[in-house]
Image (cartoon, rainbow, N blue to C red; front, side, top):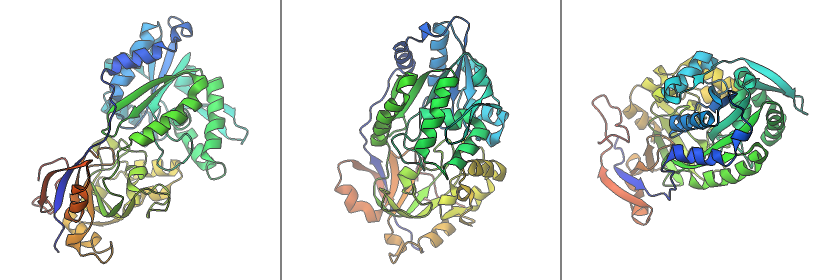
Length: 422
């Protein structure tokens, strides 16, 4: 089969960036005057999640340093629902993989899956909260604000979600995701957050917004009373700053890697156009991708292949790297069993392409509209097929770096990753 020739294309995004992260964290927290609340020697729990947030270790350390500056004792708490196989050690390992260690942060890491039920919402939902965080004198909730991969509303993924899913651990995450079958996401978030803010000693939020190049674009310290209003504003900014595919209509999207460090859904549904339906673009999606081929998992996802079920194709290497137990725990906790499904798979990438390119319509394979990306977080440089050449040349925000060239395969019939030279 003749495959399409490819172009290496650079996308130009407008991108605000924080240059001095520790100084910005300290300056933002100074505005909240937490020294008037935190007494000398009191413990302050600081959340750290499982997402691959840019500079997350530096940001976490800066929060710890600020707590020490005002006389408090920082305690880092893994806040990641059921990730890490739903075990305390697995969650600690995820943080260490991001460089969040006791030595680096100058703070103890307390990892446990144990929760306390601090309240019950008007809907009858028990409010779970990490026991270690609850036993600290105060809590600072830190997390990235961005569009959620499945929920739609004025707030989606951010400080509220960290209070619910992150600090709710496996027990809370499981119950909240089940409750979504009966109540709206916004109802649950508002009710649970109200309980957490009232009963769990939250004194501040540190919201992170990233730019389209996976860089820290903004850091905002938020007072608890302002969590909702500020997160609504920050979500609008995060949505405007998100990276995107260079084209709205794609026959075949090739993704080098997916993982929980890339997105909660392995690959960001806001990018690939599968937010409202696992296997087809809807009228609400901004992108129309007919077929998806996932080539592998990130090392940092530790075998968690949640999201692989959204793809139609994969290869044997990817299937062999899946940790079924970890994947199924996470997918069932999220009440999304199809995310753990295994797509059609073949021995090599070349065999996958031979099959996939026959399923995208009447177009001949060499003329197919193909986009090849590293992952949904890093879209600054992508490969696109020659069918897009005239479109690329007509746009100021796209620059041809190389090509056209033949699809690059190694000696075993597998594609060369986007980040490698062909």
